[in-house]
Amino acid sequence: MKKIVFYLFLIISLPSCISNKRITYLQNLSDSTAYKLDEFIPFADVDYKYVLQPFDIVQIDFASSDPELVEGFSFQRSQQMGGIGFGGGVGGGGGGSDPLYMNGFSIDEEGYVEVPKLGKIKIGGLTEDQAKDLVQEKINIFFKEEVYVRLRMAGIRYTTLGEFNSVGVKIIYKNRATIFDALATAGETSLLAKREKLFLIRQYGDGVKIHQINLNDRALLASPFYFIQPNDILYLEPMKIRQVGTADNLTSSLALFGGIFASVLLIVNLVTGGI
Image (tube, rainbow, N blue to C red; front, side, top):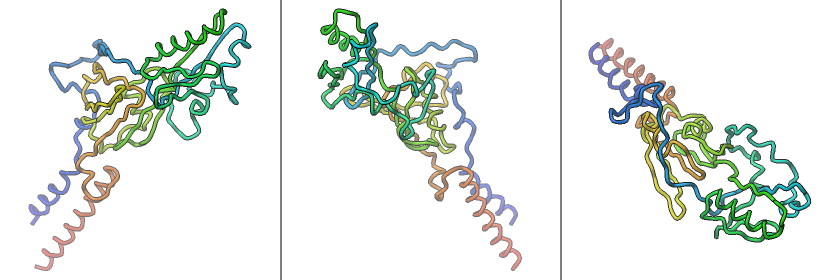
């Protein structure tokens, strides 16, 4: 009877075990792409640069030695933009924390942005630098004096779905952010996440592609997907253990299995005691 109890316990507990290999980041999983500690890992050479797309929000500022020259080219803002992301920090996308939504310039569905006095300018399909140069050309028509233009995205917006501790639209107030910046902003992954199978849905102008990323593999550091881009969607699948009961985390799952095992043990004791 003791053997029966032991095998029952083994069968019940096996599904609840998660090996460290499945939850440890940046392992050397491939001999061909093995990177030792302190070894220099170059960034991937990525040809594609993010281009501005419909419904993106950009910040456009004008500067001149004569403030009156540029006063009419900007909306009157009720508050300064200095409250956002000082020092290039990482921030979440909480409600009411993004004044650029109210004060920035939104690109319409045809790729145009409307700037006071300059009218509609088509910057959709352009990189930030190209869009900045185009707006500079437009404003140079009005002034012989030097008026400088600054144009940039209103942070890096991305979406997390699935086994993240915080899901939804997130914002990172940096010009460049890694996949680990994105994970940290989302409160990390849950223990039940398939970290070897992170799906990244990325927009490419006229369409999207789905890429699969292995967070456990150190080769990710040299991957073209090490840096996230605006409008990326990150989706993490749950492990199969999620299918057992309705447990929301590993602790609940273990408690569930413990309860089942205690019930089985009680039944076995009753049966053996009655024989």
